[in-house]
Length: 466
Image 1 (cartoon, rainbow, N blue to C red):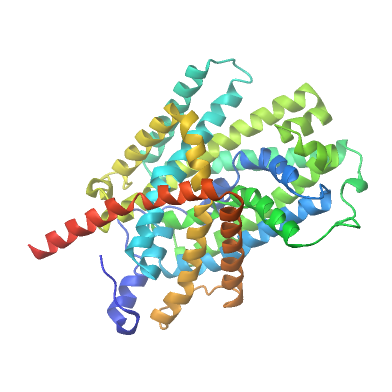
Image 2: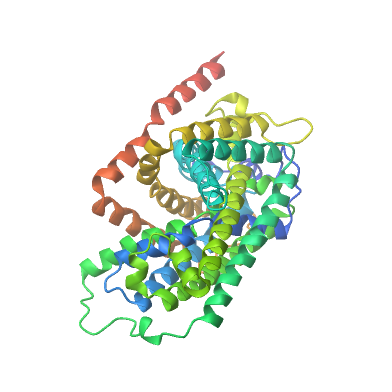
């Protein structure tokens, strides 16, 4: 589908852009929206990534470690404050794909959707479901084959729940998001009540003699990548904008409140890790959350963390299954992907074929998880490039459609979106420089969608000429 040149944008284009018509049922309220943001953000990362950050930063002090997580949280918040304008302007299924399509063109939107389907969403579903069953085996020993079998059964079962309605999926989402927030609060309170305060683990923020040069900045930014991946997922609320009640109001509020809650939880959780273990010990830990709780409660603490990771993994598996098919639906409805994925179930009003398609591909990834893990690692940094491009679309669309109704305008515009774009690109460029081979492979995987894209565009032209 082609889009009007900016100077030609008229009233009809504005109505098309801002239309809230949807093929789905608007059944999700503000509480559901906040849980979508939290549920798509908090997964297993907060139990693993702090050790990666601790091993990367120099010097290994609590102050610098917390600074990484604070900067990551503020970057996520600036993104949410900006991204909310796009969601309120275009409250339709597909979210991020729609924003890129309208702002920079079909190709940008397609490559994002292609990457989400091929690797990021489907891969995340596969690996988080495996994480869920792996920690289940902490209580019930299982063979590797049985772990994969139950992971696939989990994917298929949660797909079935979301197949019969977005409300059913949101009930599961709300329950498990609530459980993991409660469990994390227990971890935080336990760390505050049962551990002595070790101020020396936190101060000074930057020890004397530390050289704040370009090497230090590059190392800090590389550590920031792990924190950003852990904060990521808040943008997925845009995928289900077509199913939210009063999305022009509820989507921005959900983003801001949800991201703020995640920042508070992550900062307090990292404070507990540091206070119990210290950053050098965190850097050498394979399971930093387990080591922290075992230090507080012994074997009971380790069991608690295993249960917490199970809850978080199951919840985020459902969250990703619930929202991602709306991207494939939107791409297919535009004629840029398999037309069958644009079908909406006549009774349940869900993108049922897209849900099944995603489940099948995620199950294949489960079976090939050993080889696919590295592929996913190569590609994930591209998610922040697409986020930066989406936020850039705010500037494009304000120029292209200056009179379009904007119920929410990006707070701090134009500085806030610019800051988010700048820092996101610094992270992307730094990743390219620190891991050029891996980044190059990831870029090639994203660009592998080009033949499919041009094939679909050619098909559309042939249909238009008939």
